[in-house]
Length: 458
Ligand code: UDP
Image 1 (cartoon, rainbow, N blue to C red):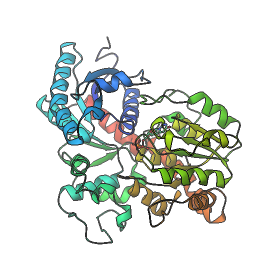
Image 2: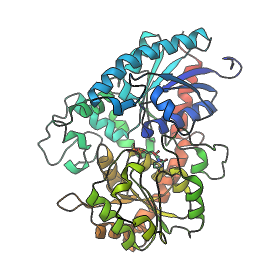
Image 3: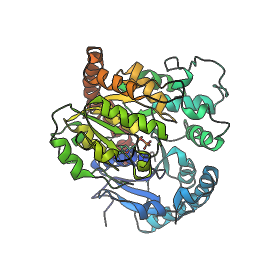
């Protein structure tokens, strides 16, 4: 067994909400801590553990229960029911786990908790441990939720221009979707907004972002919380292909089709491929799927499209076969490897925060097609603030037509009007790398945390 003095300096328990977009960044943060001689235990639900396709080798895995060991979230009647049971049974099983580790002489020093599971902080405090909050969304979005939580931003919103300190003026289309559908989805609003419940109280507040990217909002948030950016949480090899030490990416809910994607991309010329993915959760309507399918053909470029198994039936009949000369459709890919591949010229993305940050950090141009939650806010920043991509314009029925897809792809990849976007993409890629390099803003924040763990106040 590893020894506290010899092999590691402190022991953190990572507690993610069991979805891909939350596990990935928390696990990558864990990897950075591991490099700095912090032992990591990853606590996941039994159901997730039993369905994982890939396991990381740099953490100890332990399970807790969400009360739905056989089916996870899908077996709960509602989100409310799931969260309530998870909070009761999760807290109980987490306490038992802490006790077990203590008895094995492997006690935890700090719980790094996903704010969807804010009870993780309460368990930490009950057990006399440090509690570190880990936001998996941008600071801009966390700031919006803070203003709703504290009642500074009252719902329903009445203005067409929304002014929040630290953020550019926002229109309704730029706001997280839950703000507008809160009456029909009260549980979702509560879960998202309650993420800030322990802001200001937690011993540490981490965000998967970097200071230079969100300087204004971070400075503004400093009035109520000291937010520490530690991102982008991307394995170093993808940021600097010279560094080959970080091989595996982690814990995957879906099985990536890795070899076929790589082989196919290797056969394409640089910047010739459109990569398309809507992440692990978003679902497109049938009509939208058809327009996208048409748009990809009409773009007359190669495309690699991730269509999850649950979305496959929405593809036009025989589409995969009929488009096979220019397109490859897979159910899941190793996205970072794909984005880091020279063949990729642009990314049609739903603008999930991880995908946005990954594309930005790897210098990939984005065509933003936000679907829900925070994706609209991320798309606003991609289009108007960082200017590393373009946001598609849906028609009056909310559908992004095939002609619009072609227009946006051509603009970022080929047209003169896209020059500034292409320049910005290179600039942000460099800044992302600087942030995580030794002495960069994120690296310094991580070092501060590690040093505090190693020298706890007596
Ligand atoms: N991802 C992947 N392979 C795919 C599609 C997505 O590895 O085929 C990863 C992607 O790199 C990202 C995560 O899944 O880290 C999706 O997170 P994001 O926040 O972008 O979207 P969400 O799934 O939460 O909507």
